Every structure is written in C-alpha cells, then in structure tokens.
Image (cartoon, rainbow, N blue to C red):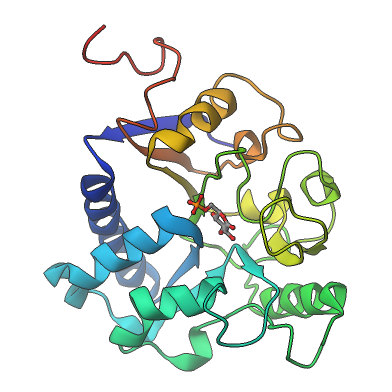
Length: 260
Ligand SMILES: O=C1O[C@H](COP(=O)(O)O)[C@@H](O)[C@H](O)[C@H]1O
C-alpha cells in the first residue's frame, strides 16, 4: 500500500478543476495502454464538484466515453431516481452529458429494485457484479480500478464506512450493507477497505473548512476504525486532494500554511 501524498489547491473550485484535469489524463492514459479504463465515483459535494468541472472541461473530449467503466464507492439505499442517491447526482453533474456505454455504468442497486429492503442481498449482488468483471492479474475480488475517488466526510468517513461501525472492520467481503449510518439516510451500500485498497490509485477529496479536522486526524496516524479515511490507500498511489481551508489544521510537517 502506498503512503499518502498531498496536493493543496487555493480553493475548492480550483481543486475540482485540477482534479478533473488529472482524471482526464489518467483515463486517457489507461485507455491508450489497455483499451479501457475503470473509475470508481464518490458521492458528496467534492465528488460532484469534480464531475461538474469535468463536464465543463473542453479536454473531456479526449476521453473515449464508450470504453470507460464506472463503479461507485457507496450508495444511499433509496429508490431509483431519488435526488439523494449518489448515482442521481452524478448523472446530473456529468453522466447524462457524455456518451457512456450504459452497460458499463455499474450503479449500485436501489431500494425499490429486486432486493427491496434487503440491503445485504443488494450488497451481495454488487459484489457479484464486481467479481464478474475480474480479469487475470486483478486483486481481491474486484476489477483493477485505475482511479477510485472518495469524498472525506467531516467525521472522517469515506464511502459509507463510518467510524466504529461494523462495515469499517470488514476484512473479507468487498461490498457490505450499512445500517445505522450517522449521516442520513441510515441504510447504505459500501465498498469495504479491502476493495478500496485493490485500486491502483485512491484519491481522497477534501475541500472546505468543515473537512479540516477530518484531514488532520486521518493524516496524523489515526487508526482506520476510528478514522476510516486513514485506511483508504491505493496500491500504487494514495493522493489527498485538498483546498487550503481543508488543509488548515494539518500538522506543519505535512503542510506548512503560507502565513506560518
Ligand atoms: O454521504 C456521503 O458523504 C461522503 C462525503 O460527502 P461530503 O458532501 O461531505 O463531501 C461521500 O463521500 C459519500 O460518497 C456519500 O455517500
């Protein structure tokens, strides 16, 4: 697993634009090397900000959208089309504006789908969909994700792995149902830390003053059960993309503020 690297941008708009440019490059490079690319999307303000910036970037046309697999790190277990679902927000921010292959858009199940209120069955189904995409050389029961993005919550949660809840302790399964999440809605589906750690690159997005404590805690040696963001690492790269407000409480050894 790779050690975290930090990139701090002036503000959240610039962070979203720079991250979108970085993502375009990663996708184009992967498509040139292997013919396709695989990206895991995150929900939340920073993830959606990145997708909106990608939609506005003229260089988005460098991506062959038909050869891109999209997966999700987590989903709020709500009916299809609910405005709070991560996939609904992603469609609005970007996905409805680009020529994706619908068969390669791997949304997590909805609560009005075939699994009804059985979120465990829904999580198992998503794990099976991931397993079916595994190719020789992939790791841990999931396909090789070129980039897996995670918004960092103010409480250090990533995906729907919240501090101290059972999902963050999972060591075997790649996808789990989450019950009793402290952030609504309480019922969710999430990739687990082992699935996250199978990605080549893990990018943690943190912009805004409300993320400053979370970033400082996760980057100061906290344990992953208490601070799930601390456990999110990529095999080749772990990249924290922050704005100055989210970086404001980092230890000076990691990021000395300009005024210090
Ligand atoms: O509920 C969720 O929250 C996190 C963080 O969201 P933010 O708005 O505080 O940036 C997000 O990463 C996750 O995907 C989502 O389901």
